[in-house]
Length: 266
Image (cartoon, rainbow, N blue to C red; front, top):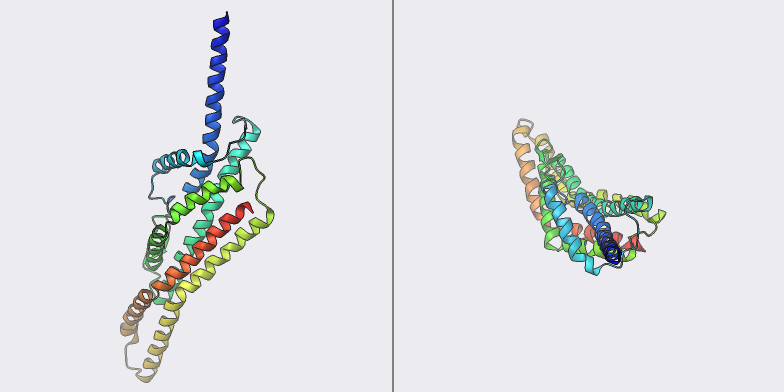
């Protein structure tokens, strides 16, 4: 009889340990996985879902020793369900901030392509699965390389691991004014897109003005056979010359994005 009671206590102890380990793993995994599915680089459609899940498991195991002690929240309960939704929401919000940052590049490419007359030359964006101009895809590739070259993916993982300190499991939701800050951050997408596309747009506009003057001076000149190649060629030259500006604007936008992420806990 005593051995039966001892076995029950051992089984109860083992079940309690397994449940505690599952709780300590599940909450970080949900937040990390939500970020991986919503972020623009790691969550691209070209990355298989299985790879993202495995990456979420590996990252959770790596950052778990750095995390604070997880609260005792029953998994199968209303509190556990709300906690799971909260972790997913935090990861998605952080990922959407990065989506806004990279959307500025696509919008800048759309403005530039329309000015150059290349808006019809579009391709499927493998990251979002939508049709974007070729210039937008070029800017997106350059931005992705700059993001990875600046170790933005490592900083993102570090920021997410730090979020468990200023946004612990089971804490209250984000403040209302912070949601307004995240919404207003979307205006930076339009501002950055205009700043990136401004050199090429203004240069092509001056070229078109020059072609207009030439057409006025020589009406017999077939401007459609001459002006279109000149406009495209000048646009590509201006894009090449404006790449340093792209680097500066994108770096500043990246800093603003990570600063806003850091504000989540303030």
